[in-house]
Amino acid sequence: MATSTAAPVLSAEEQARLVESSKRLAAFQAVKDYLRPEYTRIGIGSGSTVVYVVEAIAALGPEITSRMCFYPTGSQSEELIEAAGLNLQYISKLPSGQQLDVAFDGADEVDDDLNLIKGGGGCLWQEKIVATSAKQFVCVADFRKLSPRLGTNWKKGIPIEVLPMAAPRVLDELVRMGSINPRIRSGLPGKAGALVTDNGLWIIDAPFAPLLHARDQPSRSGEPGVWTVEELADRLIKIPGVAEIGLFYGKNGLEVTSGAQKPVAAYFGMADGTVQIKTPAIA
Ligand SMILES: O=C[C@H](O)[C@H](O)[C@H](O)COP(=O)(O)O
Image 1 (cartoon, rainbow, N blue to C red):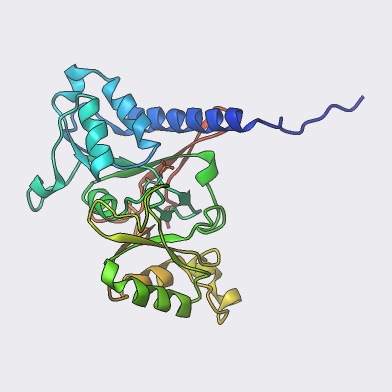
Image 2 (cartoon, rainbow, N blue to C red; image 1 turned 90 degrees about the horizontal axis):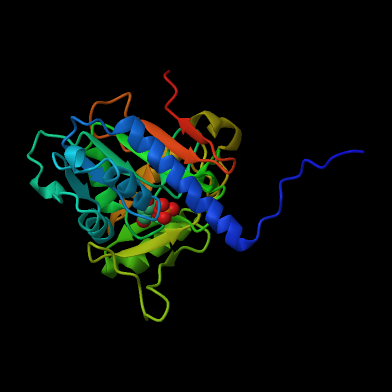
């Protein structure tokens, strides 16, 4: 008799539990691999996955963590650091010319080349500053975030942090660029109006067709609204009124010693209980 190999259908609750345990697995593995006891300056990103990063760090105990300072990317991670009893420090106090040893953060989607979409939870500008201030930026995520091309799984759009007075002009420009129904993100349910970021700005979510890599371009050139990651990012950041964009792209952390937006490694907790680690391909 033939046996079925189909994956079991999970209830919504079981699926949610699986996602949480995947995030936790990835976080503990990433901290084990990248947080060395001699490090003193650690960046802590935002979102639900980073909660487990902080849990993994706190589990190392004060004999290791008390020598370290932790740099948040916004109000949520600031609270996480304090609640875990870790030493809080601010990136504004990091002297010029110095770097964090490592920064950990989540992502909404990660493509084949380790480009990221970030900002689904409303944090991206401070995250980019902290990630690019670190010698090593490590991304931690669950299996839902793995994707060949950005915009394949994450359909809500590229988060773009904008000056509120410029939002209508930015929306117009996004439509001209082929974004499909870009929108100003609303605040929490029950709160009227736009979501206000930690920087007092708004977020526009701009959906685009899945973003290509430069190597894909010849086959799609000329199609309206079809962009490579780099072309789109370079155009978006130049729109007047845009403060920062939720695309993390460009050189990776193995190619440059500072300022990389792309991670040196991305950890994914998988549904089968394993952790998949992606690192940049060396050209
Ligand atoms: O705005 C939030 C940040 O960019 C998060 O790192 C990102 O949205 C991933 O969040 P989560 O770990 O909750 O999926």
